[in-house]
Amino acid sequence: MKLRRQLLWVLIGVLLAGSLAAALGGVWVLRLAVRDNFAGRLRAETATLARWITETPATDPQRFAENAAARLGARVTLIAADGRVVADSAKDREGVRLMDNHLGRPEIQAAMRRGFGESLRLSASTNVEYFYSAHRIEGSGPVAYVRLALPAADISVVQARYAGWLSLVVIGTLLVMAAIAIFGVRAMSKPLERMSATAERIAAGDLALEAAERGPDEVRRLAGSLNRMKRTLLEQVAEAERERSLLSSVVSDMQEGLLLVGPDLRVRLCNRALREIFELPRDPAGALLAEVVRHPAVVRVIERALARGREIRESVTRFPGSGRSFDVHATPLSPELGVIVLFFDITRLERLEGVRREFVANVSHELRTPLTSIKAFVETLLGGGLEDRDNALRFLGIIAKHADRMQALIDDITDLSRIETGAVELELGSVDAAQLAREVVTQLRPQIERHGVTLENELPAPFPVWTDRRRLEQLLTNLIDNAIKFNRRGGRVTIGGTAQGRWTTLFVEDTGIGIPEGARDKIFNRFYRVDPARSREAGGTGLGLAIVKHLMWLHGGRVRVDSELGRGSRFTLEFPTANGRRAAAGRI
Ligand code: ADP
Image (tube, rainbow, N blue to C red; front, side, top):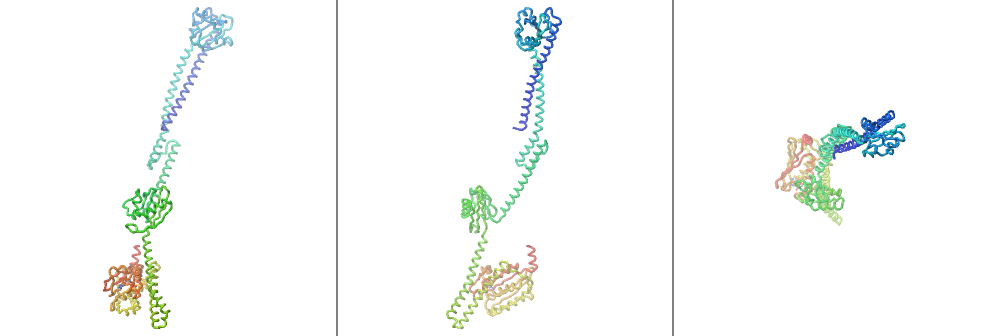
């Protein structure tokens, strides 16, 4: 029920009850007052009449009574001392004679005792209710008591008239008060109703609304509290929204695949990375896990985490389609939320692990051959081979050659790993490549002569290259050494270069055996050789070009190969100039 109506009912109830009580009380008081008024008048008239009779005793009591009754408008009865009725205005003389003895009447009894008496009762003589007032007359006249009587109906008529007026006044007052109550209640409840409507609209989501802070103190305070509450709510909603969007952007942008699976094995949430992993065209929220993740091993991990209530971690390799591998971590949340699953991409790690295994296998393979040889020759020497001095010297020579090969291999591995891990820092400066190439050729002179090749240094002197002198020497040595090794007798090796814009290029060209097309990319991989036997025979480690490739990357440059099988190859080193390096750094 509305507060306004409730208040109205209470007020009208109070008004009705009050008015009724006032009316009843008023009528009661009124009746008493009217009766007292009549009684007082009757008493005074009786006393006057008594005095009159004492002073001038009536010769004809009956006529006296009738006259007095006509004047006073009341019944007049005169009674002798023995109770006999002497006269009565309500009777004729005959009727008077027949009347009872009145000595026993209550008002006469009272008048006898204390000179005055009253009573309201039914008249035995007339059978009408009267209000009696009696007075004793002193002296020894024929009349001892004078009695006046008024019909009770006369009093009632007056009482009823006054009561009618009173009721009208009460009803009028009630109506005026009810009108005041209606207006008052409306005025009081209006601000509350307005605020309740505002509160309802706010609760329904219209948070821009403000409750009007006017009206009585309490209502104003209530409106103020409502507005403050709403602002706090707005701040909390905004904060929650900020946190939600932060969380959702973290979840959506994270590299790891994320999946939330409910206890009913339905997908509740998944991020972009996970959709990519499972190649899902749209958001799979609500779909069954088995429909989304078509990889039984992953489903099993999630089911186990759900069943056991603890985290399960497992590596799941070679996903269908992509062939990628993942570490799957399934962590149960609360029983209602289900399991949160994270997919860490370990494809690269796996590949690296494969590379590492392959590298270790290659190194041991590379070391095993010379080591087996060395062991065999040492055993031969120990088993009596030392006797034959010539042979022993030859064997020791071979042992030394294999030891050199092992040394070269270990040096190259160490060097390569230092370059790859960034342990090598270039001491860059302008280096005259023409001069350096001459020095390298001098060092390689024995090989040149052994292989019967001619060498041409076409580099204009000076030919400045922005590089690390020691590393450029290493680069040239590797390339020229290969150009000699994989050449044919009588072949040619040419060293040249150009400087163009931001790049300086050096090349080493040979007229050797060339490189088959399919192998041109692979020759820069560690331990890759087109002809392993020939390479080993020539003392190669299979790491020279890998070192060249990494050193060029370190320079911010690169190495290129052009080759024609059976006709020769050209290896080109592209160095950024000092300006080129600065420009590249600026871009980063
Ligand atoms: P290594 O020379 O010790 O064998 P490299 O890494 O220097 O190792 O070279 C890898 C392989 O590339 C060689 O084994 C060879 O097959 C091929 N190669 C390198 N340089 C030349 C070249 N100038 N002509 C033909 N083949 C070459």
